[in-house]
Length: 159
Ligand SMILES: [Zn+2]
Image (cartoon, rainbow, N blue to C red):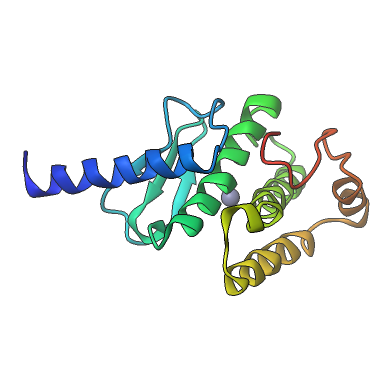
């Protein structure tokens, strides 16, 4: 096994342990939460086929990895329940995008204590939630905050 393959295997094992340790329900993820080698520009991503990849910049410490996984798993859940965010109504797609992101960040924030996130990280997640919410129309913000956007409740990782 090459050094690179060994490193990938090790990172994947660490990722598997994080998912298991924190009891993150990744059942809607296509195959498994997967470590992806080589993308130094992003932390994590959920593809439209519900594959979730975690990149090396996200591997800071266990709580940070877990929070990234919770965020991405939320997207996989959204896709499973509501499909991929696409369509010809651009403004609707944009609103859905910000709503999905707000929910993803909120899911991590809502589980912050359980995940053992630092205050600095909590603050960061809170800022992301507010940043996404700021992009929403008044009506959609109201729906999101009352847990009625798609009938989903923000902040629940299992949804
Ligand atoms: Zn996201």
